[in-house]
Image 1: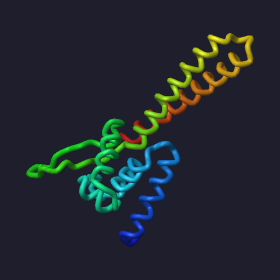
Image 2: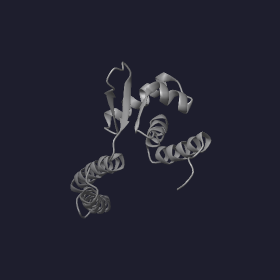
Image 3: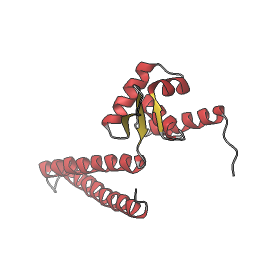
Length: 156
């Protein structure tokens, strides 16, 4: 069994992980909150706990959790007897992230097809957009199947 990581090691991991998420398009503060919640033993934290552990302000936490709630990566809940909001990271947060990305691929496909029709198949732009639409459709179908396979193998 691995020894318990030190607070410094946990902090370094959270920042590295958040950096990867941020490079993938997740806003930096939201990425840091996600990374920190991911390593929470219970998967829940209050805004004060997040602010203290990440050394950021309460308003920064508020903006990050609001964005993460809007995209359904975390939920807000109340513990019995507590007046504080507790935020919980979804168990399937990474599948949810990929589902959202897959929806974007569907929109990219639709937009590319629309452009391909506008320019027509004889036009180089039309051919380029048609190929882009085919590519997005291909990736979308594969990702959709992968997510279904994952959920079948890892039911909640």
